[in-house]
Length: 79
Image (cartoon, rainbow, N blue to C red; front, side, top):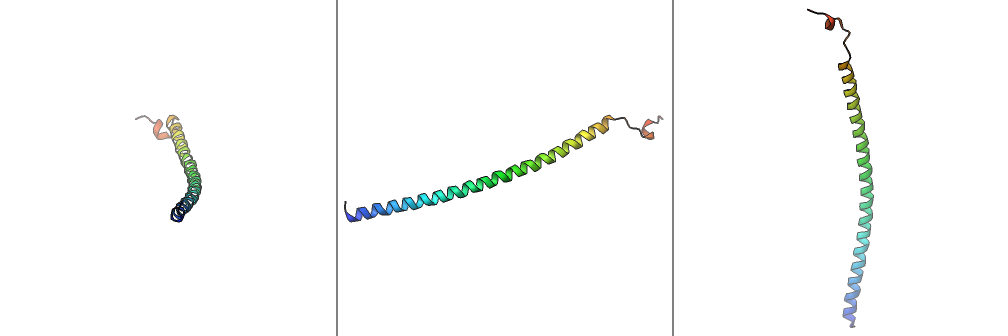
């Protein structure tokens, strides 16, 4: 194998190894970002579920008040 071909092969291998190292670092950064985003999404879901629970409580208490007879004098009077 000529010296020139060997040098080209060495350069290509070095470039491939460098690219692989960069891809490994990028993959690690993306894993970290993915974990952060999952945690953020879980927090949003928790907060949203809390708000939905409050709406359900309002609906339930509103329905209970609508179903209960009113004791106010104006509503029991007949005209």
